Length: 145
Image (spheres, rainbow, N blue to C red):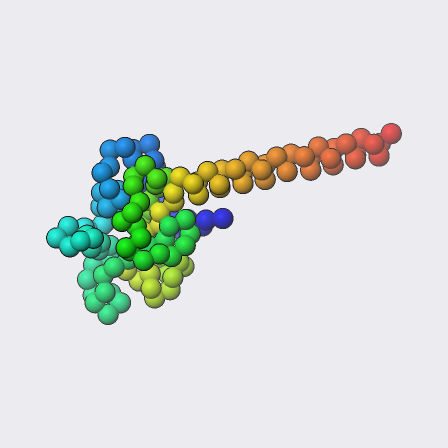
């Protein structure tokens, strides 16, 4: 299961896939998040979330795709149509995801496949709860007879 937001949901802007068709690249999706600066003069573009000077002058945020830490080079291959949501964590809760590695912020990307898996798991859990509830109810009725 993917953990997102951890205590900072009100400060993070989540981009839902409804608008993904208006973006040309994953970097376009990321740069539209509040507080994110993109330097397009490099290839791939460099992303700055928390400014320069944190973590020994390093500015690159940590990237996670579907809950797995990945190098920045891996996100270049994602298209906006594959992405369900992008979430930027830029406050103290970023440390939850990677300690010192996440000192420059974290960019959480959930793909459509992961979102569908989570939806199916939630539906299955709901069906299991309902079946257990029905079994308890039947057991109570049998006990009363």
